Length: 483
Image (cartoon, rainbow, N blue to C red):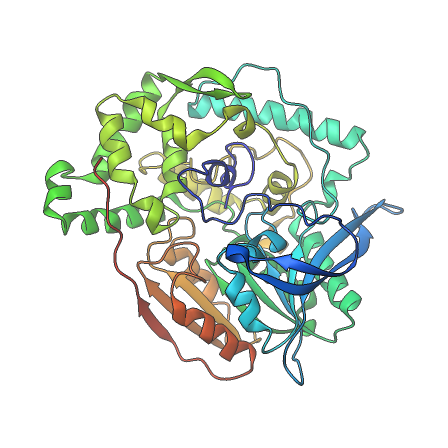
């Protein structure tokens, strides 16, 4: 989901007050960063013996003599007498950390899967224990107006400058794409001395898994994926998000008080966006740790909404937020934004990965057409597609985005209230798998693996080679807040 400034995943991670469990923010460093056994600190203070490991790969395999970068992981040793192929966790984002995910609410699943095989929390290139792209000094430019035009111009200019700075610093930025990320996974397999590995991933991790299957499928045993993101789904269709918001509005209709206060949620959201985009409102925020002010347009609010609809506990905040905004109270935005200077910075890896995965011309035309009337417009995936063409020559092309016919056994898990990877788009990805079981968790969101207690057992059963039937699990609907 989001990792940099106003990047489609950054806003989620940065809005820590509203989004505490996305497990995409940087994990605490596992110092000292040396290979070997250590005590891993997991969820809620739990500790377990683990092993930290490293290996090297070229930063850009397309450049002869490319510098080497170090990739890191944490291995949780199997408790099985005869372990199966190592299970490699592929974090979302792009930009999420496997080691960070293991410190969060997914930790019990990491532990449970040890009954089947070694479990590898892998930090993809540019994240966590792996070699990072150098941090740039904070920009001295004033913040842009948070309209689509203002933010688009700002991030295109800033990212182009950042790309030049990183390149001058010796970083092979062209190496940060999903094909090279997939080749890293096969190098990890060789480093582990395994004939095959199994893949366990979510969101962008599923996007990466598809590339691993395309490039190294004979070395993959089984895959368990959630919140599916297909090869041509870096940018989601705005109309699919509208369908989710109609679903949310129907849930609001079941609460008489909520229905009375908000007769039509999508209509109210559109009204707020239109007014603020035409006349951005002065909004008090933090800038470099000090009190500051930005002009918040409708597009900035659309981006925030695109983050809140990811999971039910933040989706529940949407009515109160929009009721306040509809009444002109933009001060409610500040707690969601954090320090705006942080939001307007770049990490490099997430943006480069998304830019390289790109979007097909046909999909781009569809997205632009739907965005004209959709509730969140083209804000859900910002700065894609707005960043397209900012760095020429990095798009991986249509061959990369071509669907597959996948024969490996697959367990595919989805939440019915996932606003980041809508179910209709996940269905398109699922169609590529010929030997699959599907689990739908009603009223779960994007972070679905840990949402329902039965999913953990299904994952263990699946990776143990046992049959898992299609299933529909259920959670209570979100309790919407009106104030």
